[in-house]
Length: 223
Image 1 (cartoon, helix red, strand yellow):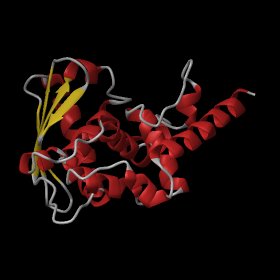
Image 2 (image 1 turned 45 degrees about the vertical axis):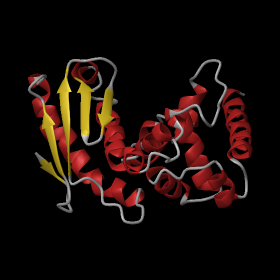
Image 3 (image 1 turned 120 degrees about the vertical axis):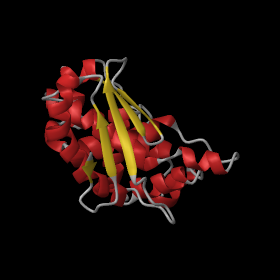
């Protein structure tokens, strides 16, 4: 079991289904997740909200990469084994963000809560992962985009693409936009109008401006 530095969260990692990953989980993965838990919680606050005081990760053979339900994360050991020196830790930091997001709580208490857009639910963890945790890996910035073939950027492209869009909005229009979007989504109050309230432009207008900026940078890199 790992403990966050502030003592507010216990993290249990079960590697009984993949004992060959136990040393990596204990000495590589756990310290990062423990260190970043309070950092992520501070990035994604909302009024009256307290992040979970514990969560668990079960590492075992499976499909895909990983998934989170409430405070339980499952991770595919087969995939992780091939990514120990690359994406393994970052992928589980992404799932740790989902643990802190807790967007399901709104619908549990209010059946009329607004549904959150999936592209943004996944875009926020990717923004934190690629632009705050491991920006040096260039996993979602213009370096990564230049290597994609036949790429047409769309702000609602989810995951890394939305992460890039969020980073652009943070840098150009509103440094607190991710925090405000998260708070609204956690309370089941997300509406597209929030973008205009915060930046003066609709999400579609922002998306068009961002897209033009990305395509220009890609073209400059190819010239």
